[in-house]
Length: 238
Image (cartoon, rainbow, N blue to C red):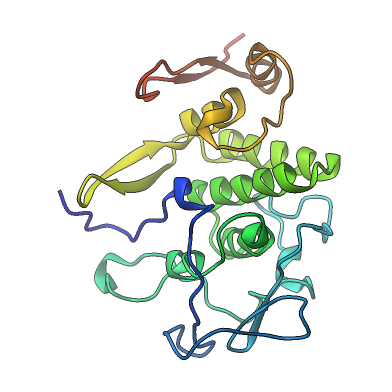
């Protein structure tokens, strides 16, 4: 079944996305990439950071409701349109096209954070919040910074607290698209290393993740192999 609703970015491809060059004005492809001063990747007029040191612009940057990323001088996407998918303009460039032009692996993690945090600030959604959390998680995997670890946990929790019923769309198997409940994906990302490929944010026994989720007000029945698609998150009632 062809996905008619949005362009998709596959989280499993975070570490293998290839670099392309885009026009700042119209976000379309142009000639090959270049570097500026050896401290980043130039995408036309946009310089993407390639380091993994993230300075948090404010205490809740990357969390639903916070706008400070839009005035962060380190954010390369301040003047770039992070367009949401529009069913009436299915071929238009979107935030996913921008994501697909960020280098894979740790060198692109910081740029991914800025892209998705910017998209979230402009258009609050569970999808944007989850990709922001994933980018923070990837940065923690790269730099082991406890402040980034805490921020990633806050971002994942925001998915549950603010966008519990939200979904995102993936595509596989020759163009077949399907939706994923993000509350279950968040819990799996916290519970299971292989869900992300990154070091877990909650170290030790995976039961520690269930314990933290319980503190947040949720119960998680873990997904089971081989497909890991039957996890269940419920809201605790007292």
